[in-house]
Image (tube, rainbow, N blue to C red):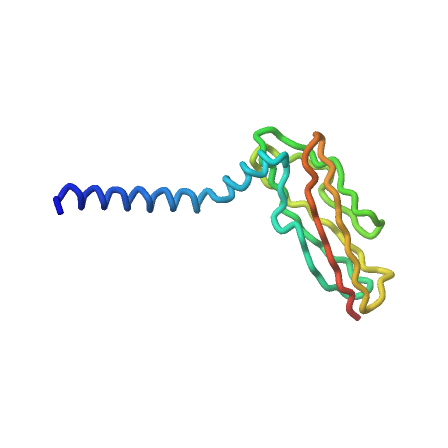
Length: 142
């Protein structure tokens, strides 16, 4: 083969390697862009949780919320469907392309050992957006 073909192969291999590194390094950015395209304003890292707790215990459950838009968004509330949970800091404002941790305090009082219950908290934002699905499943131990 000619020497220039070897050089071309090396340059092409270097370009492919560089593009691969950039894509892997930016995968969360790409995911956030796709989420915004799908109508999401906020995405949650680890939206589904399976936990165990003792009767009477209060569990802190942290959710990392990321605003995938360039504009600030306000989390105006979180509805849990029961009086056994509260969220802090809510309300809160998440700046554009930023992350905020919201802690859900879940009380396991009144649950008997061996029971399992599920919660599907809903985030309420200050603008229309696709619903963020959260899911918590708790197995109660003694």
